[in-house]
Length: 320
Length: 96
Image 1 (cartoon, chains in turn purple, cyan):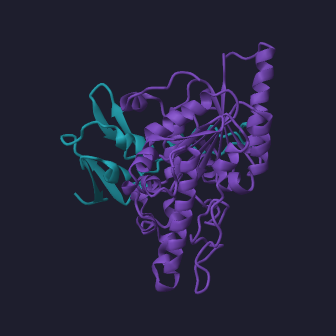
Image 2 (cartoon, rainbow over the protein chains, first blue to last red; image 1 turned 135 degrees about the vertical axis):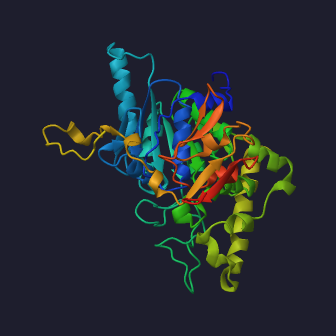
Image 3 (tube, rainbow over the protein chains, first blue to last red; image 1 turned 90 degrees about the vertical axis):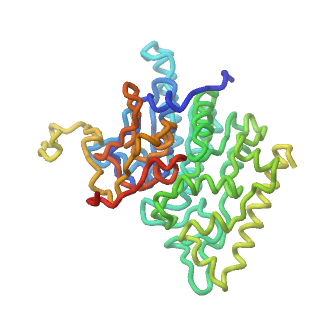
């Protein structure tokens, strides 16, 4: 692997905005921040492809487009298949000497619905075939674009319109699918999780994913103020809390070898810095019902799941 | 660019290709609260530029200043919350 990419905040600020202003995402949309930052990490000519989802809908409302790079929209289920096709076409063009550029990167961007549920078979197939592309999953934990329906990425106890919190049911009764671990099980060269709050970490991981030969998968948490019923100004703060409470730990797996990233390593070395789940839950209205007497026990259950997954991760990283 | 002008089906690009940059659409009128930047307090850490979902805060290298573009700012307030030196304050639109 190439030398680690080093940069300063001013260098990032001077880079052109490839994801332009004027897109129609809601105020305080963290996925928009994620897209801006990912496109600041590109190293040269890049083609992006987007599956259906919030960022596809809001960035290209006909005839407007927020993308300053070649961009293709594809259906919910096949963004990875689309990226494989682009990569294969580039390979052939290069072989025939028809490609002007030395190398063109391919980025596939999809939300949690297009990855956890609908797009997983295309993703699994593309990774198995070993296409050279970066897959970015911006995880806002439900189908926000169509009006907050539950997805495989919605966490336990979260309210959505299809997992409503009522008298008997405390929001979504199932757990969140550990998608990044499923991708590691594909024995792919690079898998990482990132949070926009730790932007240096996010940019470095995006660049690493592009530089690596073969498929790379980046799972980014991206709070959605409309769907999470949170304050728009707190989007970045919530994505930081997600790391501090270990509900979304940051790690990378290079060729299946797990490694904790700095923000989570600090918590692993000093367990007293790990915050309680309540702090994360109370920032979001979608967990409001958990603070009533009848559903109070669900918080303990959530904490148990988070602790179990965190301990399992520590073991994989050799830090337990 | 006038996006209201009607084009016939023969004139528009094929396959639904979008041809107008989104910067032609101003989202500034969505705003309820207006971020006000205090250049005296600002340390040019760039965090507001980095976290802004709309890319509405830019750094002018020539004058070493952070500039908020009110044409695109949706007034979410992320910059106010994330500013480490409290140089940005949110004021209700229309108030002094």
